[in-house]
Image (spheres, rainbow, N blue to C red):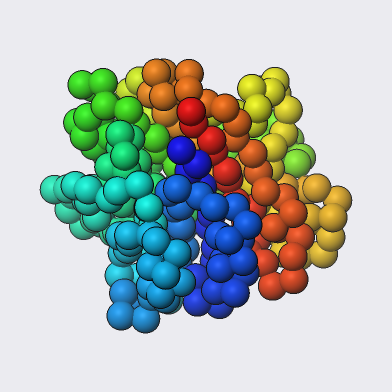
Length: 258
């Protein structure tokens, strides 16, 4: 199974890039973040004509996630069941695709350490971990959690770590939230089994020459239960897509599981 994830930063604005990328990459399941599109205007045809079933959130001018699958799409849950405001935003979709329970997420940004937005982010991650565990992980269900986590969990996930170690996206509490999510029984998947200390950035600021000089952050991640992780053939960051004209500021993740 090929599973992909991409914070596309507006599915309608980048539709031609998305269609070309789907045709070249041929994912079985593809997950999208920051679709920035209400359900009535979502370009469903781009996916359905390629054989995909769709589950989407009803996003307005920001946020939004989607899953497209051509290996089945069952037991769909939009958001985290039972959550209350301000934790009930539609930031996740959970669905069973073939034999794998896939959760795609677009985590809150947090904005600034110590603010209400930051505290909401930490609480949301705690709720996400409990939901994933309840939703089959604790019973041995093959599970993948994939998407834009808005956390750089290690110093080598930031181009100049000493500048950002205590700021939003890299703060100790956010990194602990990431660690606690792993503690529910998930394994972090890394590019081709490479050394965990090697950077594999997925996001580059649009300003200046940040991408050309590789001043990036690793904010997009894939986690899996140990049995599914053992089936990993490869996981790669599609940097070529990030270099195209009109691209998103995130690069796609491509995950192959045997």
